[in-house]
Length: 240
Length: 342
Ligand SMILES: Nc1ncnc2c1ncn2[C@@H]1O[C@H](COP(=O)(O)OP(=O)(O)OP(=O)(O)O)[C@@H](O)[C@H]1O
Ligand SMILES: [Mg+2]
Image 1 (cartoon, each protein chain N blue to C red):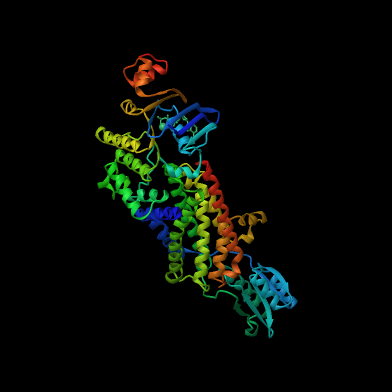
Image 2: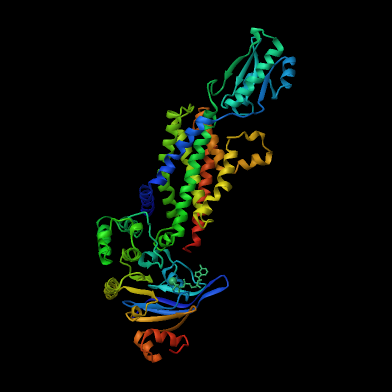
C-alpha cells in the first residue's frame, strides 16, 4: 500500500524551542490516522506541516509523492483548523461560496456541493443565517463542511468534534468512515479517547515526540491496558 | 477568479456591516460640512514679484510684510507665478500699478491686497489714478478659504477612512484566523492583496464620487477642473491608503493598536498636505513632506479644483501615488510570507 502522507525525521523549532522532535510516520490511502496527545504536545504544529502551511526546520513531509510545502498541493488537501476561522459577519452560504470559489468550484457544481456538505453536517436549515448567530458547535460543523467542499483526497482535521453533541459526533464519524472507504486519507487530532478508538491507527504525541504508533488494539495489547487512556499513560511512563 | 472571490466577499462584508459603510460614505460629508461652516483664516508673508517698478515704490514695498522678487518682464513674472514661486506680481500698466494675484489661496490674496492698500495710500495719498488694478491668475475675489483647502480635505478623507477600514478589516482577517484558513487554500499571496485592492477599490470609487459631488454641488466648493480628473486622483490616493493600511495592520495585534497609527501616520500628513503653508517650515521638514502620499494627493487635487489643471499637468503627483501603491502592494505580498511559506 502506497503511503499518501510520509513524514520523515521532522523537527520544528520556534526560536530555540523545539516543538517537534524527529517525527516520522506514514499514513496510507483509505486510512483514518488519529493524533493523540495532551495540550501543547505539538499536534497542531504537525498537522500544519502536513497541510503545507509551514516548513519543517529539518526533515521532509511528502504528500501524494510531492514534497511539501507546495502551493498546487493545497487544492488537494482539506484542512480544518483548530479554531473556527469563519467570517462571522457573513452568512454560512456566503462563507461556503467564498471558499468554494477559492478551490475553483463554480456554477451548478458549486451550488450542489455546498448543499451536500451542509446536509452532511446537518446545517441545511441554517444555510442563510449569519455565522455570528451560530452556536459553537454549529461553527465547528460549518468549518468541517468548508474543509470537505472540494472533495479533498487528504483530509486534515484538527480537533473536529469539539463542542459537538454525541449524536451528531457519531454521524460525523460515520461520514468520515464512508469518505475513508472512498479512498480519502484522514488525519484527526483529538483529546477524546473514545474517538481515538475509532481510528484505524493512532500516533501518540508527548512533548513533541511520537512515543508510539499502531492500531488501537495493538497499543492496548502492548501495554496490557484495557483503554486507550491507560495505554497512553503507560507509554508516557505512568502506570495506572 | 480567486481575486474576484475575494472582492466579492469584501463587498458582501460591507453590505452586512452598514455602520462601517456609513462611516466611509457619510462621515466625510458631515465633517466637510462642519469645516465649511466654521473655518477661519491665518497669516502669511506673501511673495511678490516686481516688474520694472520705480525705485521709491520698491523701497516702500520692502518695508511691508512681504518678500520681493524682481523680474524683467511680466511674462517672466507670470511664469514664476504659474510655478508657484510667487503669490502676486506688480507691474506698471499705463503708469498705473497692476497687481496680478496667483489667487488660489484667499488668505494669501487678502494679505497681498492689504499690503498693497497701505502702500498705495502711502505713495499717492488718495489719488484715484494710482489706485492699483487687481487681477487674478486663478480663483476670484469671492473665493473663500474653504475653497482653497477643501481639495486637501477631500484627499484627507479619502485617505483616512480607507486607511482605517482596510487596515482593520485585514487585521481582523489575521486575528480571527481566517487569513490562515485562506492561506490553506491554493490562493496566491498576490491574489489576496489584489482582491483586497479591487474589493475596496469599488467602495473607494463610490466614496470618491460622493465626496466630490457633495463638496462641489452641495457645499459649493470651487471646482474649475474636470470631475473625472478629481476622481482619478481620489482613487489613486485611496489605493495608497488601502495598501498602506493593509501593510501597517501586520504590525498591529488589535484594533486599538491599529488606531495608534492615526497619530503616527495620518496626523503628520495633514500638517504637510497644504492645510498649513509648508513654505514657512524648516527645510528638512519640507523634505519630510516629500515622503507623504497625502502631500502629492492634495497638491494634485488643488491643481485640479482651483487651478483647473488637467491630468497631464499633474502627472508627477499621479506617478508618485502609483509608485507608493505599488511599493506597498509588494511589501504586503512579502509580509504574507510570514503566514505561509509558499
Ligand atoms: N508560532 C509559534 N511560535 C512559538 N511557539 C509555538 C508556535 N506555535 C506553537 N508553538 C508551541 O508549540 C507547542 C505545541 O503547540 P501545538 O499548538 O502544536 O499544540 P497542540 O498539541 O495542538 O495543543 P492543543 O491540544 O492545546 O491544541 C506549544 O508549546 C506552543 O507554545
Ligand atoms: Mg492544537
